[in-house]
Length: 192
Image (cartoon, rainbow, N blue to C red; front, side):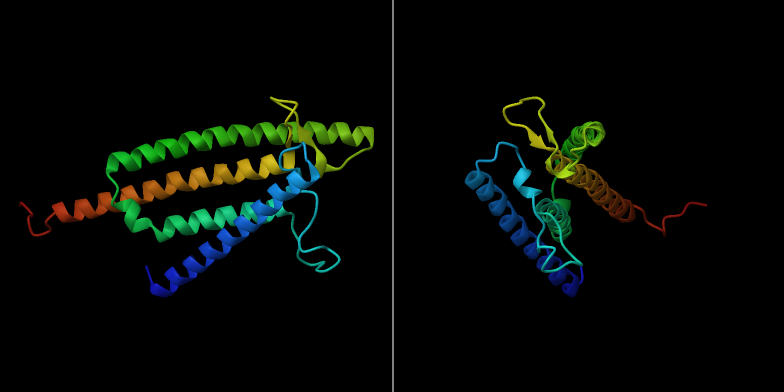
């Protein structure tokens, strides 16, 4: 990997980690201070920077967190491709299987959340109280419901990360297989 590319990836990785930490601390502290009873609600109830300050570019903390998680994970993998390549083939295959399992579970959650979200949006629209940011999922435990925006974004990120992990590990396997094939094949050993 080119040194400039490596430095840029490290910078992106570091910045995204800082955003992850700040956003997470904010969400957790705000939840405790407000005694929030809905998981993730503090991540979707306001925009940053405030719309009044910067009307052209603003996002909810969950959007900042989701984007940062993606950037952090992807840059971290690319920065460590040599180390991961040195793991045993069976360990890499096991990791790929785990990533596939996590991806399947995350896919189910994404589909469930979007289906539920659509139904609840329709219900709230009919009732005339539509605010998509405060819709919550009371399942499976009504005592600790989850904010649908929060859950949908996090599980979507998890699904994308799992898919990328499978691709990434397969890319490493293909590269190793090609290198092994090139080492064992001798172009001068042609039988006529």
